[in-house]
Image 1 (cartoon, rainbow, N blue to C red):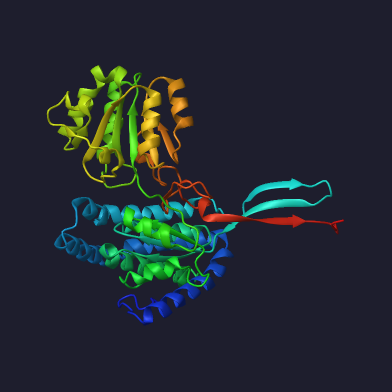
Image 2 (image 1 turned 135 degrees about the vertical axis):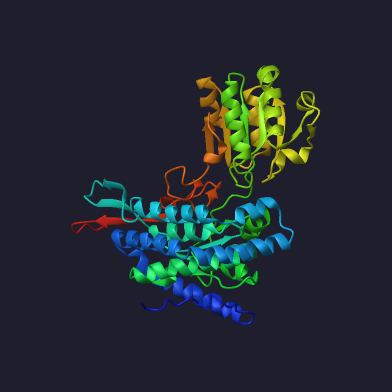
Length: 434
C-alpha cells in the first residue's frame, strides 16, 4: 500500500517556517479541492466508508493518544466539563466512525438542481449546487470535530484544513492520519483532509488571513475567546455562533411531567454542549404548581440553581441570580431560573439575554407555541422537546460542522447542504442581448 503523506504529523514546525508551511498546506488544499469537487458521488461515499473502517481499525492508537491528551488536561487543571468533551472511549470512537458512515449514506448535495426557470427569450437558467472550495475549521477540545468536519467537507466536495486546539492535538492528529489513509486507499487526494501539525497559535492567524485566497470559509468550534478572535480577525466568511445561551420556557399550559422531562434533559444530559439549556423561565401563572418541583428536581440531579426572589422563595438551596447570570453560558451543572409574567415577558427576556442559538417552549397551548416559534429570533426554536436536539445528527444531517447563528448563507446546524454554494447554468440557442 502506498504511504500517505502526513505533513510531518509527528513533529511540529516552528516559526519562521510556520507561515511558509501554512501557505503550502493551503496550496495543497486548493489543488485537492479541485479533484474532490469533480469526484463522483459513489467515489466519495466509498471513501467515507473506508475512512470509517480505518477509524475503527486505529482504535488502539487513537485512544492511546487521547489518554495522553486527557492526562495533560487533568494535570493542567482543566475543568471537568472540558475533560468530558475531550475524552474518548470505545463507544464514543465507535459513534464517531458511525457518524462518518451516515454522512456517506446521505444524498449527494453537489450537482443538485436548486431551481430552474425559462426566460421569455427562451434562455433556460438552472441554479446548481456546487462545493464552497476549501474550508478551514478551527476547534478546541472536541476530537470528534476532526472526523465530523473532514467527512462533511468531503461529502460536499470540499477540501478541509483542520486546526485542533492544544487540548485535543494528539487525538486529532491520530484521527486525521486514519482519515487520510482512507482517502488514499479510495483513490482520492489525501490532501483533501489536512490537519495543522502545530500548537502554535500563529497558525490560527495564518488561517484567518485566508492563506492568500486558498481558504474560502472559516468555521470555529470552541469557546467565546476563540470565536471572538475569529470574528475580529477573519478575512474570509465565517460560519459560527458566539454563545449557546439556550432557554426553556415553561408556559402556563405546560404539562408538569413533560416539563420535568424536557427541562432535565435540556440541562443535564450533557452540560458541556452548546445546546444545553442555561436559563429556565417559568410562567407566573403556573409557578405555584410547577416551579418548586422543577427546582427540586434540578437540585437533586446535582444542578446548582441561581434564581430571582420568586425562585429563592421555593427552595432555600437556590442562590441569588445576578444580572450576569442571565447572559452566562455555564457549560456546567448550573442553571439560572426566573419567573416571568407570561409569553411576552419570556420572549422579551430571550431577546434581551439570548444568543439566538436554541430556545424551547413547553406548552399544550398550540396558539402560544405558534407565537413563540414565530417571534423568538433564534436559529433553532423548539416546542415540547429538549434544546439538546440542536445537533446535526439529530436533524438527519449525519453530523454538523457547527451551529451558525448568523443570517447569511447558513443558519442552525451546518451540514452537507450548507457546505455548498451555487452557480447558474444558462442554456441558449443562439440568443444575443439587444
